[in-house]
Image 1 (spheres, rainbow, N blue to C red):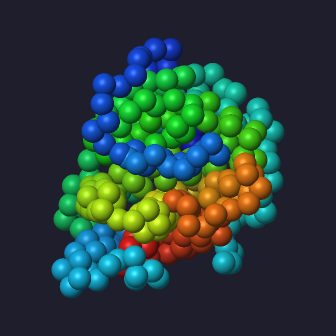
Image 2: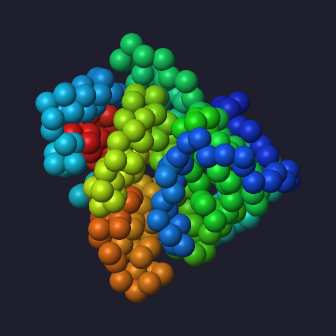
Length: 303
């Protein structure tokens, strides 16, 4: 990905090197990239408005959105190949270079979603990205290397320990700078859901749903965030910022963190009724939809 020398977001809060104790409470439910140790913690067009209309009409008519569920990548930029680690600005780089990398990627998401929201007569308020090392606090609970990256709706911040990038490369087999960028774009996707009302509606309903239905609803939320990340990839491609193989890096990351792949890696078998983020095939499919269409309306996993 061509990221060097581009605008950096100012919405980065760097807490690396600062220790903080356990949080005093959990007023929100985090939405995160799944980790092998367990299931998720609670936490351009007119498509944004259409998404809200579909969700609202469904519930007014007494229709459960859970019952309304519902390639080829000729522009993927070539086959996936791992890059030498010295080309990766994330896993082994110094702090300044890593900060530049995430700040540039965050800035690109700001440019995209500001444009999309303006097209819908809405105002996009970007999230803050909190970089930390080891452990820090959030209104959604303690953030640590164990939790993985997550979005906290209570303070509308994304929490990321850059050590996760090395884990994604070494433990998950998802190498490349665009794999790391995909992770951030996915969490920004949750922020978009928060702003348009999709995530608050999910959090309102989830406690009243049977566990399997809650898991199924969670899968739709996560797949939509993957699709939004694909829209961001489409936007980056239109800006001529993609390198050959970037899309394959993102798809490989989506594959490696699918629920079925993670469960098979850790316990040798998959239990579909416990899935909360989607299978590898689903995550790749919905990222691809966003990437190929560049249309928010194509990301309606709820309706």
